[in-house]
Length: 319
Ligand SMILES: [Zn+2]
Image (tube, rainbow, N blue to C red; front, side):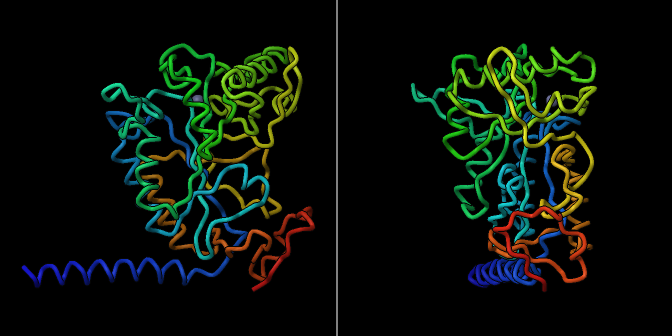
């Protein structure tokens, strides 16, 4: 019995050491690519657009163990990479505000976050691994029909949006009711985007939706309609437009970084593992933080890949 215990302890120590050494051994590479993961339903059963709470938990464990840490989408857009040295930022996004992403349950008169919903799983994981970082963007549908209207508990929808914002999460625009923006004229496109902003602000006054995820991945006929505008007294301004596919995103410091066409990776078990394996095999393609938000550390050979318009406050360090 004692022997088994010793063996288990040794194994645990070896695993901890291995993950530590792995993370430490990765040299900073801030021109590598970053995964923006895209989740839809967190629910049962596992399907094309559904991840079970258990599988979502496994995704988080796998990301953590392999040296990934959560970074917010807007931090990335601002070129503010704050994850620790030797780790790789990863962005979580959730589309469509389906019920399983964020659900309250009543336990003897007290409202609690359902441990089986997306936020419940994520928060429980963060209690165990606070250094994973707390960040995710929820691309919600404020005016959709049930069950996709703001997570499907009308009596709690304001509480949920405020909870997200107060706890470091971000809310993004996904149009008012999932309109295919390629099918409509300018007035409808602009109304869809402005109204989503207005409806969210009913619950979280002054909150700005800074990013837009395209329903069905379809751009409007003129992309400028989606970037900024004022309709019915509401001004919207999106700093990034996210697609539904496209693989890993270029580094925000790369000349190839295009916030108007940000690719994402659909977080399905096989695909996510495939990407993690890809980055393990091709470390030069993987973004690795230098742990200092004011410097950009790159391989000397990649200097010509830098974005020519980096803010002056960022210092480029070659290794
Ligand atoms: Zn959607």
